Image (cartoon, rainbow, N blue to C red; front, side):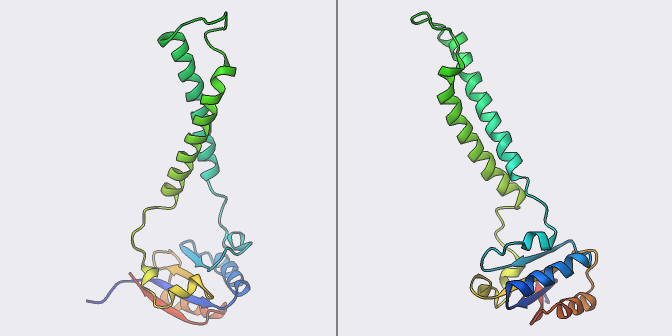
Length: 177
């Protein structure tokens, strides 16, 4: 039984060639595609048209939640659980609640960041068709890849292959899912 095609993968030798190809694929209107590089390439996200991540907002929400939880917890404990006045001090003071609030801010921010990254990145992903490609290991060493998925609305096997060859893709192969 033949495998279903996942899309096309093209090989590039340099980050500059990949960046140029990414700009042209973006300008051609493709939406479901990605670049695989052995190291971060400055400006590639802009060339791909990738928007800013939502993770910082999720982290901020986690931090604010942690801070408010710490302040509320200390207020509740001072007001209802242990309403003991010691040395004429008030039952609640933000100064005394700050250490707990600070630690909960850090804890909730870390959990929100990790959770947000897992959710937004679709993790855990135990399988991806790109991993079946025989040269994909070189994508962690010295080659650069551009993958266009068949699920893209603009995908047409012949036209997409022609585009990848036109933008400088050395080897253009079909990926199987």
